[in-house]
Image (cartoon, rainbow over all chains, first blue to last red; front, top):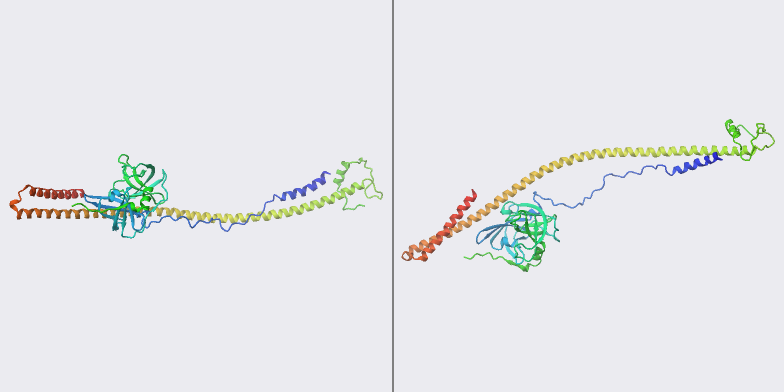
Length: 241
Length: 203
Protein backbone atom coordinates (compact mmCIF):
# COMPACT_ATOMS: atom_id res chain seq x y z
CA UNK A 1 0.00 0.00 0.00
CA UNK A 2 2.94 2.39 0.57
CA UNK A 3 4.06 2.34 -3.02
CA UNK A 4 0.70 3.19 -4.59
CA UNK A 5 0.25 5.96 -2.09
CA UNK A 6 3.58 7.41 -3.10
CA UNK A 7 2.61 7.13 -6.70
CA UNK A 8 -0.52 9.17 -6.04
CA UNK A 9 1.23 11.65 -3.85
CA UNK A 10 3.90 12.41 -6.43
CA UNK A 11 1.56 13.93 -9.03
CA UNK A 12 -0.36 15.68 -6.30
CA UNK A 13 2.84 17.25 -5.04
CA UNK A 14 3.73 18.13 -8.61
CA UNK A 15 0.42 19.92 -9.09
CA UNK A 16 0.76 21.67 -5.77
CA UNK A 17 4.22 22.84 -6.77
CA UNK A 18 2.79 24.40 -9.91
CA UNK A 19 1.03 26.94 -7.75
CA UNK A 20 4.34 28.39 -6.71
CA UNK A 21 5.94 28.39 -10.10
CA UNK A 22 7.59 31.65 -11.20
CA UNK A 23 5.63 33.63 -13.70
CA UNK A 24 6.81 35.58 -16.70
CA UNK A 25 8.10 39.11 -16.01
CA UNK A 26 5.56 41.88 -16.22
CA UNK A 27 5.79 44.15 -19.27
CA UNK A 28 8.23 47.04 -18.96
CA UNK A 29 6.87 50.58 -18.78
CA UNK A 30 7.28 52.85 -21.80
CA UNK A 31 9.67 55.04 -19.85
CA UNK A 32 11.52 54.81 -16.58
CA UNK A 33 11.81 58.59 -16.33
CA UNK A 34 9.03 60.00 -14.16
CA UNK A 35 7.00 62.81 -15.64
CA UNK A 36 8.01 66.21 -14.28
CA UNK A 37 5.65 69.01 -13.40
CA UNK A 38 6.22 71.61 -16.07
CA UNK A 39 3.98 74.07 -14.27
CA UNK A 40 6.23 74.48 -11.25
CA UNK A 41 5.96 77.70 -9.30
CA UNK A 42 7.39 80.53 -11.31
CA UNK A 43 10.32 82.17 -9.59
CA UNK A 44 10.89 85.89 -9.97
CA UNK A 45 13.35 86.37 -12.79
CA UNK A 46 15.27 89.58 -12.54
CA UNK A 47 16.38 91.19 -15.74
CA UNK A 48 19.38 92.86 -14.17
CA UNK A 49 20.32 91.05 -10.98
CA UNK A 50 18.30 93.24 -8.62
CA UNK A 51 15.51 91.69 -6.59
CA UNK A 52 11.84 92.53 -6.88
CA UNK A 53 11.98 94.46 -3.61
CA UNK A 54 15.02 96.40 -4.85
CA UNK A 55 13.23 97.26 -8.08
CA UNK A 56 10.36 98.69 -6.04
CA UNK A 57 12.61 100.68 -3.65
CA UNK A 58 13.27 104.37 -4.23
CA UNK A 59 15.69 106.85 -2.80
CA UNK A 60 13.98 109.91 -1.39
CA UNK A 61 15.76 113.24 -1.16
CA UNK A 62 14.01 115.93 0.78
CA UNK A 63 14.73 119.60 1.04
CA UNK A 64 13.29 121.29 4.11
CA UNK A 65 13.33 124.88 5.19
CA UNK A 66 16.40 124.23 7.28
CA UNK A 67 18.35 121.57 5.43
CA UNK A 68 18.30 118.29 3.60
CA UNK A 69 17.39 114.72 4.41
CA UNK A 70 17.26 111.37 2.69
CA UNK A 71 14.98 108.40 3.11
CA UNK A 72 13.54 105.43 1.28
CA UNK A 73 10.15 104.75 -0.27
CA UNK A 74 8.60 101.73 -1.96
CA UNK A 75 5.98 101.37 -4.64
CA UNK A 76 2.63 99.76 -3.87
CA UNK A 77 1.01 100.42 -7.24
CA UNK A 78 1.93 102.06 -10.51
CA UNK A 79 1.63 105.64 -9.17
CA UNK A 80 1.91 105.37 -5.38
CA UNK A 81 4.89 105.17 -3.04
CA UNK A 82 4.88 104.70 0.73
CA UNK A 83 7.48 106.13 3.07
CA UNK A 84 7.65 107.48 6.63
CA UNK A 85 5.89 110.60 7.78
CA UNK A 86 9.05 111.89 9.44
CA UNK A 87 10.92 111.69 6.14
CA UNK A 88 8.64 114.10 4.27
CA UNK A 89 6.48 115.99 6.77
CA UNK A 90 8.70 119.08 6.67
CA UNK A 91 9.55 118.81 3.03
CA UNK A 92 9.59 121.76 0.71
CA UNK A 93 10.73 119.65 -2.17
CA UNK A 94 10.79 115.87 -2.61
CA UNK A 95 12.87 114.09 -5.22
CA UNK A 96 12.58 110.36 -5.80
CA UNK A 97 15.10 108.23 -7.67
CA UNK A 98 14.83 104.58 -8.65
CA UNK A 99 17.50 101.92 -8.11
CA UNK A 100 18.82 102.57 -11.63
CA UNK A 101 18.93 106.34 -11.33
CA UNK A 102 15.61 107.16 -12.96
CA UNK A 103 14.14 110.27 -11.36
CA UNK A 104 10.40 110.39 -10.69
CA UNK A 105 8.24 113.46 -10.49
CA UNK A 106 6.35 113.64 -7.21
CA UNK A 107 2.99 115.33 -7.64
CA UNK A 108 1.65 115.07 -4.10
CA UNK A 109 2.84 114.26 -0.61
CA UNK A 110 0.46 113.19 2.15
CA UNK A 111 1.20 112.12 5.71
CA UNK A 112 -0.77 109.85 8.01
CA UNK A 113 -2.08 111.46 11.19
CA UNK A 114 -1.87 108.21 13.15
CA UNK A 115 1.20 106.18 12.23
CA UNK A 116 4.63 107.23 10.95
CA UNK A 117 3.58 106.75 7.35
CA UNK A 118 3.27 108.90 4.27
CA UNK A 119 2.11 108.49 0.71
CA UNK A 120 3.80 109.98 -2.33
CA UNK A 121 2.02 110.12 -5.67
CA UNK A 122 4.20 110.17 -8.75
CA UNK A 123 3.36 111.21 -12.27
CA UNK A 124 5.38 108.40 -13.83
CA UNK A 125 3.94 104.94 -14.39
CA UNK A 126 5.93 102.42 -12.38
CA UNK A 127 6.78 98.97 -13.73
CA UNK A 128 7.03 97.09 -10.45
CA UNK A 129 5.50 97.43 -7.03
CA UNK A 130 5.20 95.35 -3.89
CA UNK A 131 2.08 93.53 -2.77
CA UNK A 132 0.83 94.07 0.76
CA UNK A 133 0.82 90.83 2.77
CA UNK A 134 -2.51 89.37 3.84
CA UNK A 135 -1.25 88.46 7.29
CA UNK A 136 1.43 89.52 9.73
CA UNK A 137 4.73 87.65 9.79
CA UNK A 138 5.27 85.43 12.80
CA UNK A 139 8.00 85.83 15.38
CA UNK A 140 11.17 84.25 14.04
CA UNK A 141 10.28 84.67 10.37
CA UNK A 142 13.05 86.09 8.23
CA UNK A 143 12.29 89.49 6.78
CA UNK A 144 14.24 91.56 4.28
CA UNK A 145 14.77 95.30 4.03
CA UNK A 146 15.98 97.15 0.92
CA UNK A 147 16.85 100.79 1.37
CA UNK A 148 19.34 103.60 1.10
CA UNK A 149 21.08 103.92 4.49
CA UNK A 150 22.75 107.31 4.90
CA UNK A 151 21.49 108.15 1.42
CA UNK A 152 24.17 105.90 -0.01
CA UNK A 153 23.91 102.90 -2.36
CA UNK A 154 20.90 100.60 -2.36
CA UNK A 155 21.46 97.95 0.31
CA UNK A 156 19.50 94.79 1.11
CA UNK A 157 19.72 93.09 4.50
CA UNK A 158 17.78 90.28 6.12
CA UNK A 159 17.10 89.20 9.67
CA UNK A 160 14.52 87.65 11.95
CA UNK A 161 11.36 89.32 13.17
CA UNK A 162 11.60 89.48 16.96
CA UNK A 163 8.02 90.37 17.75
CA UNK A 164 5.77 93.31 18.49
CA UNK A 165 6.53 96.09 20.97
CA UNK A 166 5.03 99.40 22.02
CA UNK A 167 5.69 102.30 19.68
CA UNK A 168 9.19 103.40 20.66
CA UNK A 169 8.68 107.18 20.65
CA UNK A 170 5.31 106.98 22.32
CA UNK A 171 3.75 109.18 19.67
CA UNK A 172 1.67 106.65 17.75
CA UNK A 173 -1.03 104.42 19.21
CA UNK A 174 -0.24 101.21 17.35
CA UNK A 175 2.35 98.64 18.30
CA UNK A 176 5.41 98.32 16.07
CA UNK A 177 7.59 95.46 14.88
CA UNK A 178 11.03 94.77 16.29
CA UNK A 179 13.37 93.31 13.68
CA UNK A 180 17.01 92.28 13.87
CA UNK A 181 18.07 94.17 10.77
CA UNK A 182 20.83 96.77 10.64
CA UNK A 183 19.68 100.15 9.41
CA UNK A 184 20.74 103.78 9.43
CA UNK A 185 19.19 107.19 8.85
CA UNK A 186 18.11 107.08 5.23
CA UNK A 187 16.69 103.57 5.64
CA UNK A 188 13.51 105.12 7.01
CA UNK A 189 10.56 104.26 4.79
CA UNK A 190 12.04 100.97 3.55
CA UNK A 191 9.62 98.13 3.03
CA UNK A 192 10.01 95.18 5.38
CA UNK A 193 9.10 92.18 3.22
CA UNK A 194 8.56 88.50 3.87
CA UNK A 195 9.97 85.63 1.83
CA UNK A 196 7.33 86.25 -0.85
CA UNK A 197 8.40 89.90 -1.22
CA UNK A 198 5.12 91.01 0.36
CA UNK A 199 5.18 94.05 2.61
CA UNK A 200 4.75 93.21 6.29
CA UNK A 201 5.98 96.50 7.73
CA UNK A 202 7.69 99.84 7.09
CA UNK A 203 11.03 100.45 8.76
CA UNK A 204 11.01 103.73 10.67
CA UNK A 205 13.51 103.73 13.54
CA UNK A 206 16.73 102.19 14.75
CA UNK A 207 17.62 101.14 18.25
CA UNK A 208 20.27 103.55 19.46
CA UNK A 209 21.42 101.16 22.19
CA UNK A 210 21.41 97.84 20.36
CA UNK A 211 23.33 97.77 17.10
CA UNK A 212 21.48 95.87 14.41
CA UNK A 213 18.00 96.28 15.86
CA UNK A 214 15.34 98.30 14.08
CA UNK A 215 11.66 99.08 14.38
CA UNK A 216 8.99 99.00 11.74
CA UNK A 217 5.44 100.31 11.46
CA UNK A 218 3.15 97.29 11.56
CA UNK A 219 1.18 95.80 8.71
CA UNK A 220 -2.00 96.67 10.60
CA UNK A 221 -1.13 100.37 10.63
CA UNK A 222 -0.16 100.29 6.96
CA UNK A 223 -3.37 98.61 5.83
CA UNK A 224 -5.41 100.94 8.04
CA UNK A 225 -3.84 103.95 6.32
CA UNK A 226 -4.34 102.52 2.85
CA UNK A 227 -7.94 101.55 3.60
CA UNK A 228 -8.84 104.96 4.99
CA UNK A 229 -7.17 107.76 3.06
CA UNK A 230 -9.23 110.34 4.92
CA UNK A 231 -6.58 110.12 7.64
CA UNK A 232 -4.00 111.59 5.26
CA UNK A 233 -3.00 115.24 5.42
CA UNK A 234 -1.27 116.98 2.51
CA UNK A 235 2.17 118.46 3.04
CA UNK A 236 2.10 122.14 2.14
CA UNK A 237 5.84 122.59 1.84
CA UNK A 238 6.18 126.33 2.48
CA UNK A 239 8.86 128.11 4.48
CA UNK A 240 8.33 131.24 6.52
CA UNK A 241 10.09 134.26 5.03
CA UNK B 1 -2.82 -16.22 -18.52
CA UNK B 2 0.58 -14.72 -18.74
CA UNK B 3 2.74 -13.20 -21.38
CA UNK B 4 6.09 -11.69 -21.59
CA UNK B 5 4.68 -8.21 -21.08
CA UNK B 6 3.03 -9.16 -17.81
CA UNK B 7 5.94 -10.99 -16.44
CA UNK B 8 7.24 -9.14 -13.43
CA UNK B 9 10.87 -8.41 -13.19
CA UNK B 10 12.82 -10.88 -11.25
CA UNK B 11 13.68 -8.41 -8.55
CA UNK B 12 10.01 -7.55 -8.04
CA UNK B 13 9.21 -11.24 -7.70
CA UNK B 14 11.93 -11.53 -5.21
CA UNK B 15 10.58 -8.53 -3.37
CA UNK B 16 7.08 -9.94 -3.41
CA UNK B 17 8.30 -13.24 -2.12
CA UNK B 18 10.02 -11.65 0.79
CA UNK B 19 6.98 -9.49 1.69
CA UNK B 20 3.99 -11.70 2.42
CA UNK B 21 0.59 -10.32 1.46
CA UNK B 22 -1.69 -9.63 4.39
CA UNK B 23 -4.10 -12.46 5.09
CA UNK B 24 -1.90 -14.98 3.47
CA UNK B 25 0.52 -17.40 4.87
CA UNK B 26 3.78 -17.44 3.10
CA UNK B 27 4.15 -20.79 1.57
CA UNK B 28 7.06 -22.83 0.45
CA UNK B 29 8.62 -22.47 -2.96
CA UNK B 30 6.64 -25.48 -4.09
CA UNK B 31 3.65 -23.22 -5.03
CA UNK B 32 2.38 -24.01 -8.53
CA UNK B 33 3.86 -21.89 -11.28
CA UNK B 34 1.89 -19.02 -12.72
CA UNK B 35 -0.07 -19.75 -15.86
CA UNK B 36 -1.32 -23.15 -14.78
CA UNK B 37 -4.84 -24.03 -15.80
CA UNK B 38 -6.20 -24.25 -12.35
CA UNK B 39 -6.67 -20.84 -10.56
CA UNK B 40 -4.44 -20.81 -7.60
CA UNK B 41 -4.80 -18.48 -4.52
CA UNK B 42 -1.93 -16.36 -5.86
CA UNK B 43 -3.80 -15.25 -8.98
CA UNK B 44 -5.81 -12.35 -7.47
CA UNK B 45 -2.68 -11.01 -5.93
CA UNK B 46 -0.94 -11.26 -9.22
CA UNK B 47 -3.81 -9.38 -10.90
CA UNK B 48 -3.66 -6.66 -8.30
CA UNK B 49 0.06 -6.36 -8.83
CA UNK B 50 -0.51 -6.07 -12.51
CA UNK B 51 -3.04 -3.29 -12.07
CA UNK B 52 -0.72 -1.45 -9.80
CA UNK B 53 2.05 -1.78 -12.28
CA UNK B 54 -0.15 -0.32 -15.01
CA UNK B 55 -1.12 2.49 -12.74
CA UNK B 56 2.49 3.08 -11.84
CA UNK B 57 3.54 3.22 -15.43
CA UNK B 58 0.68 5.58 -16.22
CA UNK B 59 1.57 7.81 -13.33
CA UNK B 60 5.18 7.79 -14.36
CA UNK B 61 4.27 8.67 -17.91
CA UNK B 62 2.02 11.48 -16.68
CA UNK B 63 4.76 12.60 -14.35
CA UNK B 64 7.24 12.51 -17.19
CA UNK B 65 4.94 14.54 -19.38
CA UNK B 66 4.22 16.97 -16.55
CA UNK B 67 7.91 17.31 -15.84
CA UNK B 68 8.58 17.94 -19.48
CA UNK B 69 5.86 20.56 -19.58
CA UNK B 70 7.17 22.11 -16.40
CA UNK B 71 10.66 22.18 -17.76
CA UNK B 72 9.43 23.80 -20.95
CA UNK B 73 7.45 26.35 -18.99
CA UNK B 74 10.37 27.14 -16.75
CA UNK B 75 12.64 27.46 -19.75
CA UNK B 76 10.17 29.87 -21.36
CA UNK B 77 9.79 31.92 -18.21
CA UNK B 78 13.51 31.92 -17.64
CA UNK B 79 14.22 33.07 -21.16
CA UNK B 80 11.67 35.86 -20.78
CA UNK B 81 13.29 37.00 -17.54
CA UNK B 82 16.68 36.82 -19.19
CA UNK B 83 15.44 38.87 -22.14
CA UNK B 84 13.90 41.45 -19.85
CA UNK B 85 17.02 41.52 -17.74
CA UNK B 86 19.07 42.26 -20.83
CA UNK B 87 16.61 44.97 -21.83
CA UNK B 88 16.79 46.49 -18.37
CA UNK B 89 20.56 46.29 -18.31
CA UNK B 90 20.70 48.02 -21.65
CA UNK B 91 18.21 50.63 -20.49
CA UNK B 92 20.12 51.12 -17.24
CA UNK B 93 23.37 51.50 -19.13
CA UNK B 94 21.84 54.08 -21.45
CA UNK B 95 20.28 55.94 -18.55
CA UNK B 96 23.55 55.80 -16.65
CA UNK B 97 25.31 57.33 -19.63
CA UNK B 98 22.62 60.00 -19.91
CA UNK B 99 22.87 60.65 -16.16
CA UNK B 100 26.62 61.03 -16.40
CA UNK B 101 26.20 63.48 -19.28
CA UNK B 102 23.50 65.36 -17.39
CA UNK B 103 25.64 65.55 -14.25
CA UNK B 104 28.55 66.82 -16.28
CA UNK B 105 26.32 69.43 -17.88
CA UNK B 106 24.87 70.40 -14.50
CA UNK B 107 28.33 70.75 -13.05
CA UNK B 108 29.42 72.83 -16.01
CA UNK B 109 26.27 74.96 -15.85
CA UNK B 110 26.61 75.42 -12.09
CA UNK B 111 30.11 76.68 -12.60
CA UNK B 112 28.89 78.95 -15.38
CA UNK B 113 25.99 80.21 -13.25
CA UNK B 114 28.37 80.88 -10.39
CA UNK B 115 30.62 82.90 -12.66
CA UNK B 116 27.67 84.78 -14.14
CA UNK B 117 26.25 85.39 -10.66
CA UNK B 118 29.56 86.88 -9.58
CA UNK B 119 29.66 89.04 -12.69
CA UNK B 120 26.03 90.06 -12.19
CA UNK B 121 26.66 90.93 -8.56
CA UNK B 122 29.65 93.00 -9.59
CA UNK B 123 27.65 94.72 -12.31
CA UNK B 124 24.70 95.36 -9.99
CA UNK B 125 27.02 96.71 -7.33
CA UNK B 126 28.74 98.89 -9.90
CA UNK B 127 25.37 100.14 -11.16
CA UNK B 128 24.32 100.96 -7.60
CA UNK B 129 27.58 102.82 -7.08
CA UNK B 130 27.11 104.79 -10.28
CA UNK B 131 23.50 105.59 -9.37
CA UNK B 132 24.66 106.56 -5.91
CA UNK B 133 27.33 108.83 -7.36
CA UNK B 134 24.72 110.37 -9.62
CA UNK B 135 22.34 110.83 -6.69
CA UNK B 136 25.08 112.50 -4.68
CA UNK B 137 25.87 114.67 -7.65
CA UNK B 138 22.20 115.63 -7.68
CA UNK B 139 22.35 116.33 -3.95
CA UNK B 140 25.44 118.46 -4.46
CA UNK B 141 23.87 120.24 -7.38
CA UNK B 142 20.80 121.07 -5.37
CA UNK B 143 22.90 122.14 -2.41
CA UNK B 144 25.13 124.35 -4.52
CA UNK B 145 22.10 125.74 -6.34
CA UNK B 146 20.53 126.63 -3.02
CA UNK B 147 23.84 128.09 -1.88
CA UNK B 148 24.07 130.23 -5.01
CA UNK B 149 20.51 131.44 -4.39
CA UNK B 150 21.50 132.27 -0.84
CA UNK B 151 24.59 134.11 -2.07
CA UNK B 152 22.33 136.02 -4.43
CA UNK B 153 20.18 136.96 -1.43
CA UNK B 154 23.35 137.96 0.35
CA UNK B 155 24.41 140.18 -2.53
CA UNK B 156 20.94 141.70 -2.72
CA UNK B 157 21.01 142.39 0.99
CA UNK B 158 24.42 144.00 0.78
CA UNK B 159 23.13 145.97 -2.16
CA UNK B 160 20.22 147.23 -0.09
CA UNK B 161 22.51 148.09 2.78
CA UNK B 162 24.91 149.83 0.45
CA UNK B 163 22.12 151.67 -1.33
CA UNK B 164 20.70 152.79 1.95
CA UNK B 165 24.10 153.95 3.08
CA UNK B 166 24.67 155.90 -0.12
CA UNK B 167 21.26 157.43 -0.42
CA UNK B 168 20.80 158.29 3.22
CA UNK B 169 24.32 158.37 4.53
CA UNK B 170 23.68 160.92 7.15
CA UNK B 171 21.11 158.75 8.81
CA UNK B 172 22.94 155.44 8.39
CA UNK B 173 24.66 155.62 11.66
CA UNK B 174 21.64 154.72 13.65
CA UNK B 175 21.70 151.44 15.53
CA UNK B 176 18.96 149.84 13.51
CA UNK B 177 20.87 150.22 10.28
CA UNK B 178 23.99 148.86 11.90
CA UNK B 179 22.03 145.92 13.13
CA UNK B 180 20.74 145.20 9.63
CA UNK B 181 24.26 145.41 8.29
CA UNK B 182 25.48 143.04 10.97
CA UNK B 183 22.71 140.56 10.22
CA UNK B 184 23.54 140.61 6.54
CA UNK B 185 27.19 140.13 7.32
CA UNK B 186 26.44 137.19 9.59
CA UNK B 187 24.21 135.66 6.98
CA UNK B 188 26.84 135.98 4.29
CA UNK B 189 29.53 134.67 6.63
CA UNK B 190 27.36 131.63 7.37
CA UNK B 191 27.10 131.00 3.65
CA UNK B 192 30.83 131.20 3.30
CA UNK B 193 31.24 128.82 6.21
CA UNK B 194 28.72 126.43 4.65
CA UNK B 195 30.60 126.48 1.39
CA UNK B 196 33.90 125.88 3.15
CA UNK B 197 32.33 122.97 5.00
CA UNK B 198 31.02 121.59 1.74
CA UNK B 199 34.37 121.81 0.01
CA UNK B 200 36.11 120.32 3.04
CA UNK B 201 33.70 117.37 3.01
CA UNK B 202 34.44 116.71 -0.63
CA UNK B 203 38.15 116.43 -0.09
